Image 1 (cartoon, rainbow, N blue to C red):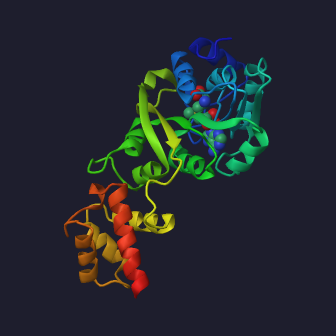
Image 2: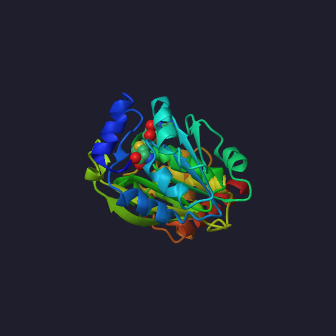
Image 3: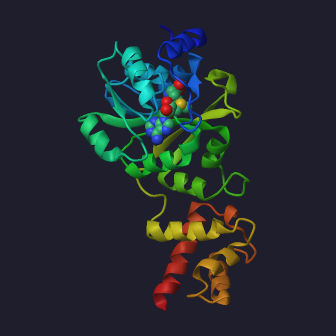
Length: 289
Ligand code: SAM
């Protein structure tokens, strides 16, 4: 059976009485080049254990199983389990894990599933949980790479440079922990049912070290959050809303000046080094009080 032939897929789904669930972000791939190119881009090889989230009926799982040492695929929809048992039957290096990827301890799962292998993550993610899943994959802190297909719009946000309209707190989070790369786009016609938006594949490679060591990570992100909380406001107003009870606005203005930043600068202009310098200077002032 061809897992990327629309007619074969419809016949398979019909035989199992399967109904698509919008709330589970179910858009299945129906073009063979897409799972092939995603698996290829993931760099899956015999020494890798691949964690997949949402195998659907398994077109990407099959491509990964043909390349990797092991594949563990977490699927939330119980109705897909008998279908996966059929489509993945030829592969003895795949485990399907029924459950919600958002509720599982991904690092523990990787330890248990992939002893002696290099863990990587690869998935065509459900649109509705893209951001929390990417956050969980990064925070699991155990993957050598994370290759995911997501909405193009979110992919652009993740890879955005400071000063562009796509740049925001999530770009900074991803770019602080990883080096993101925009790989290729996938049009809506490649899915059943076709989504309203274009998709894109990105690869995130975790940085061996944080990009700066001027300041504690948690305080760095506190400052980032404060700076983007009021997107159309100046950085000074954002910082004042978050730290105003402890630091006078004039002190905050002089902190910006010390960091070489104009008083009317907006958060979206600052890259990681500028945020790190600002957070370190702010923290020094807070400690000195
Ligand atoms: N990988 C398949 C493909 O490319 O054709 C299906 C991708 S589809 C966009 C997303 C898949 O994720 C669906 O199979 C859906 O049931 C599953 N899913 C949705 N939410 C999930 C969750 N929280 N945990 C695990 N799987 C989930």
